Picture (cartoon, rainbow, N blue to C red):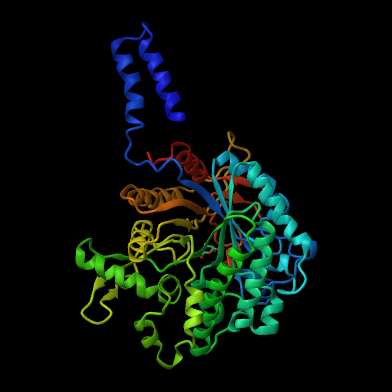
Length: 489
Ligand code: FCB
């Protein structure tokens, strides 16, 4: 549309007799260069932003919401940066209209958010709380009004505390069943307005960090055998939830998940290294994405765990591998692989201490993450629809003011550099036909970064957590331009 009107005005210019031949040639060359850029995305590519309930909503005591394990954890002394909590966060619960208006300005076509389970079932199970659900109805209606497609995650880590107390959270299959019940109810209520659903966000984070290493809620350091069983329960819960969502939907829906896959790329781009990366990607993601697509844990995964391997039945593996409609990949970094003579045939290259990273020390700068992981994923398992459900970085952003900008501005050039390089690699992939259909930037707003509290800013919008004032950063303008032109200049 934009392109067509551009060409039309160029034609009008060319016809104007007052122009010198040089000026006419210059005017004609402008549209010729711009549409010819090879860095375009497809017309229906979805550009979006992403958030999660506990990180942005606040309003933790409002409208009947029950406590989650993150309320408990963040209020436990010594667990989070300076004891910070998500009690208020971005106050998105009350300010979502303002944030949707900002997204409209930005031009996004999609918004990824999550539903707080304890708003819908304050006790995790039992009687639903209609006031909690109403918030999401209002939110989704406002998104639709703004022409923004909602992409909804059903679990982004805020497990009802009641289920932790009663069942030990994800250590028990009872929580998996409770999750399926919550999903059945919620999708039944909201599938009239939401088509895209993700069951669970990042098994690899909330299970390993929450139940194995203890730095995320609920802060447990389980013995390895129990930890591995907890992993199994979580992927089993995903499978049950896919089935529950499909059974409850009142019209056709798309169901997937969002996983922070361990990114693996060939250290050198030749056949042997690419093969090593392929084997590596399968093994490094063995207990979730591989199990979901293949219906089995790899031999190498089970053997490496020895007596700590999870106990499971063939029936459970069938549930886990219930077909999904799309895979959401959260990706911030990747690691290089080289071939190895030892089974299973690859070795991950350890990163030297000088390997560059962004403000969060786990976000190693490697733009090829968004090229190789989706590409190898699509070929390994013949995945037809992939979304990048999270990508972005933290940065030590500072709000400046000057005479021209008394309202303040943030020049987050490091984030712009990160995004430009990652998106260039994403475009390389989609240009080759890798089936990535959309990209959700993490995050719309600076927000509560889990155990790091408010110390790590990930937003393309700066948030003053005292006043809740929002200030779009340079990266916001950068992203808006990409969305507007649907390309990288
Ligand atoms: C991902 C989480 C998301 C956010 C980003 C920075 O692992 O899914 O909630 O914390 O990291």
